[in-house]
Amino acid sequence: MGSCRRKRISRRRRTRRARIVRTSTTLYYAVADGVKRIYTDKDGAEGYGCNRIPNPASVSLINVFVNGMLQPRTLYRIQTGKLRLLSDDLPAEGVPIIVQSIRIKG
Image (cartoon, rainbow, N blue to C red):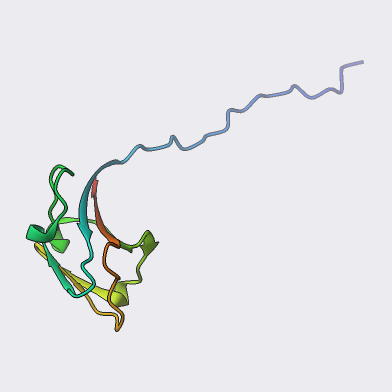
């Protein structure tokens, strides 16, 4: 009598390969003076390499941190070379301001 066993067929699962996306990041560092609401490239802290605010149309994502806290988009406006804080409260003197610009390359 023949065998009732089924042959086991091994199937390879098709998985998507992780795709590595190239990115480049630029950072702008400034230190608040407790008075200003607008910061420009000239206000950037020295010693941090290329310390400028790029054109928002040329980057994929922009994050603004004041005193290490991520700021919602409604609290700032960015133009080429210029950051404007829109909140009623100004950062205290000595507080770090960081603009992180990320460009995702396809």
